[in-house]
Image (tube, rainbow, N blue to C red; front, top):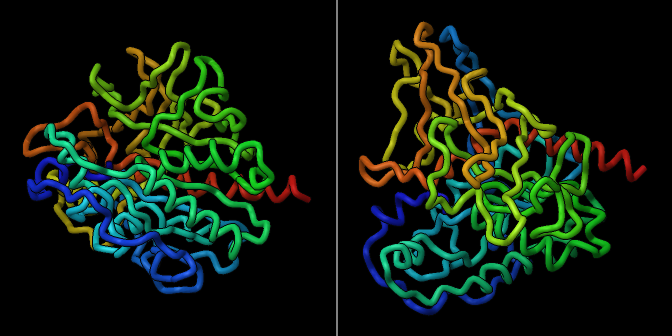
Length: 383
């Protein structure tokens, strides 16, 4: 659910057709991948950032891809497809390429990135459901594609390397299924460095780190822990989940949604290493950011880093467990005191979605650094 604003506003109000527009994918074909090592693909998009200090000073932070990465990242993207069918086709449109720039390409500074296309549930289908319509969307189709891509990766590319699973929203949910069905308790589990399941609910028993959705893999509590799960859903600290939120709460007696703060896995509040879009949460959202500094100077890089501006902390309150995001505003300095990222329909903020649009961007630097550190710990254990 990467852009719910599109579901309710930008997607044409048409009924989704019942059939998928494309046959089962062949992941031996390079066109079935958004990112594969050795090809100039969606992961080659610009990752440059402008660092804006609290005093308004700007410095460039160019992106440096890894030259000889020692581990892999297998990424599954969230709901972005604007195809008119309930399940998407296997053509990489602007939406699929754009989400790679926002969520996956930066991992290329530490790992080889594999990102398959898959016939996901589309924004069109979700819009139909959310407005009371009926649609024959095939969730099993989306999962089966991801499994096929995973099997192809293991057969052709893995060669015993450690791998970090990375997904957001629909993508994270599919990876959670893959872990439960195909990885936990099997020999391949030894290759999992960690699983970053962001923007989806991962159920755990209250007060414990394992035993809900996943029976073996625990939540990550240290940066050197491997074979564990990083997960959270994000809300502004001053706008916690309302009673109708689908995020941060799970069904089942004694179960709660897991939360791991990438900036402070052991708990507590910490400064987040965020990479925010210089043009907003994503191109399709209604809300655009104001000037980053009081002088109104434009930012020419795709991303902005504002050190110290955001803090994150896992919070349990009101029956929800979530990553609370605090903006450390200072009206006396020239830097912006606010960020965008709320899901909006026109002027209305859908508070039950929190900061879902920028879940990953809020902690992107932390996630990349954590993946690298966990991979080093994984290799050390293997020795």
